[in-house]
Amino acid sequence: MGVCCTAEHKLRSPSSGTLIPKSEISQLTRLDSIAKHYEFLKVLGYGQFGTVREAYKIERSPMHNDNDSTKFKRYAVKSINKDRVKKGINMLKRELETLQILDHPNIVKLYEIYEDSKYIHLVMELCTGGDLFDHLISKGYLIESEVAQIMRKMLSAVNYLHSLHICHRDIKPENFLFTAQDDLSEVKLVDFGMSVKFGDDGMDTMLGTPYYLAPEILKGRYGKECDVWSFGVVMYYLLSGKQPFKGANIQELFQNIRVGKYAFDDDRWNNISIAARQLISKMLTVNPEARISISNALKHEWFTSYSQDQQTGIKIELFNSIKTFKRQSKLWREAMKVFVRNLSEEQLEELHHAFDEIDRSKTGVITPSDIECAMRRNGYVIAMDEFQKLTSTIQDIGQGRLNYTQFLIAAMDRKRLMNEEGMWDVFRHFDLDGNGEITVKELKYALEKAGCCVSDNDFQEIIEEFHLKGGDSMGFDKFKEIMMCFSEENTPAGTEHEEEYGERRVTRRLSMRRITIRRNSLLTEQNPSKI
Image: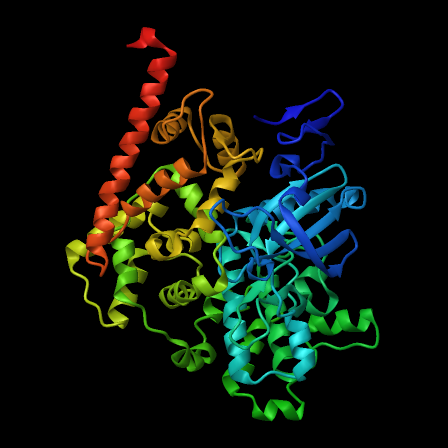
């Protein structure tokens, strides 16, 4: 197992042995035919560099008997022609590297990247509700309460980006998609082709969409504040159905942007609150140093006036799950990350609302203090020793704070959500050549692809946990049993099925011991001299 590089600068697919021309992003991709893993359905759209199609996974769990494809989870697969994207390959690489590190409920998910001789295929979260621009066009304008709800989610996503020193640089309605065609669907930020890591020196490349460009971009050097300006334009547009800055030509448009020439003179603004207009004015402040920050915008009274109706209760079981969560190996954590990323929006709905309720500062991460405050708001009292235990748990999981995926792993009801299909998705993630067996080399390669820093000692612990050595491998049944054993060690006590799961926990541990004994017996049979 592994990726072989030839003298002709080609890479060999680990599953088929096919030679694939090396690209600038091959270290990020899975060298394989996507048609072996996904069935393509309808075309969703065409772009300059390729096609976007709806797809579902072909491979099902060995225990899966329902072959009704209408029930399978859908994905959006963006197939990019490698010849067409040659000049923009560095921008694509930057976009993919950015997407791989992002972890926020209002940012689109990138699941997998495949590469063959002609195309790079991005397997992404499917959003069927259209973009915010289409949503606005269909309605003419949006009511203020709806705009507040949408703006809060969009600002939260970019506030998270800014905390990672990433500037999006192309904030506009077309780059926010709805997950479904209903008023309760989530909104997701997409298209990170222009995003960039920024430092103290700022940025100086002039790019973006004309109507949403900040004045400092037109002048030269700029910082993350340009995203705030763009949000001011978006908010004005959503509330009125019109752009704040106009011009008979591009030069006149840019001049009006430079001086901040706009007005609330349309009749529509008579029905908009003073607080909304004040927030827009703070975002559309020409001087970037005097412009409101995204974190302060989220604290503006306009949002607080609409936040009361959005609060949802959080069950005590969720807090108990986090408190009793135990740190596991790097492999288990990576496996659980794959697992939760493949859960549907419906399965995650309750946890998503809980994360949003706890993350009041909208940083995209949760601290022990955030959880304590949320517990008090929901009428739960936490003792000092319990708070210390909670703090210790979060320190172990996420070095003092939880990102979205870490929160999902710690808080989810693992007994209810860890089904056969979920485990199969995780197994398939590590079974890179698709032969139904996971080898030591595949484990190491998959962890490296996922960006996990695994030392030799860490990896030795991992393969010992899974009872693997050298050329050993394991099938799905063994993998599932071991993973479930780890998960049930993280099952909080005091549930209504405690006795049943307690028995199963004992059974799992015994069966793991049987696996160890059986494996050692086989090794002894093969190497009698080691007795």
